[in-house]
Each structure stands twice: as C-alpha cells, then as structure tokens.
Image 1 (tube, one colour):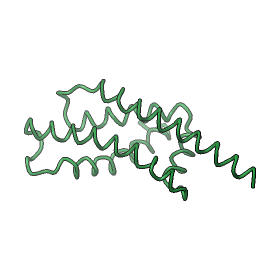
Image 2 (cartoon, one colour):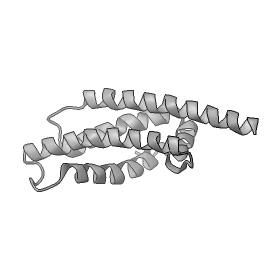
Image 3 (cartoon, helix red, strand yellow):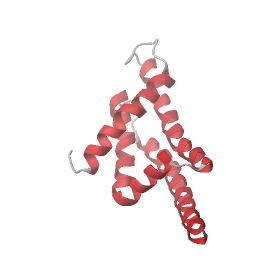
Image 4 (tube, one colour):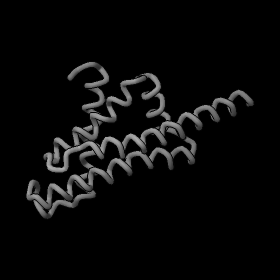
Amino acid sequence: MAQTECGNASVDLLILVFKDEMSQLIEEVYGTIRKNASLIEQTESLFDGFIEYHRRDVVIARALIRELSFSGNPGRRKDAFTIPEAIIEKLVHFVSAARARDEIRADIDPVEAARCLFASIPPVRAALRMSGVR
C-alpha cells in the first residue's frame, strides 16, 4: 500500500508541475500569435506551441495526457479540465476576432466553434507531428 501511495503522490506532483507548465505555456504561446492572422493560422500557431512542448519528452507527455484523460482520481479530473478550458478560452478570442473582421459568419457561436476547433485539430496534428510526419 505504501508503494501505491508513493506512486500516486509522484503522479500527483508530476501532474501539478505539468499543469503549471502548460498554463504558463498557453499564455506565452498566445502572446506570440499575430492578432491579424487568420483564424486557422492562429489556431495552428497555438497548437504548434503545444506540440513543440510535448516533443521534448514524448513518453512523459503521453503518460501525462493518458493520466489526465482517464484518471479515476476526482482531484485529477479537475486538473484535466483546467488545461483544455484555458486553451478553449484563447480559441474563443480567436473566433470572436474572426467574426469581428468578417472572416467567419456572425451567427457562429464563439464558444462552440472554439470547442470544435479544440476537439478536431489537435489530435490529428499532434499524432502526425509526434510520429514525425509534417
């Protein structure tokens, strides 16, 4: 039992560090994105920053993402939602700006569009990039 508790504490610490690093990364990457770029360019730039971060250590990145995605620990579930919600918040800004410059239709809900972008683009790009395909 002590081994399990120690293992859980190690995973919890790793996840806290990951969450803090990702929160900082989200802000840093967002700050570098051209405000007049197209919605797609902005979205790709945002996710390219995350892909580069995860490329540092793919094995750890996969383990962390798996743990956050499928954890039975309720405390970790909250952490798991913190990162995507912060990313979606940035995507909402991009979608709202795209609407304001008439790049997309005015009747598109920025929150729903941001969630769709989050759900559809990163898994495909991340899988391709992590496997070495450009």
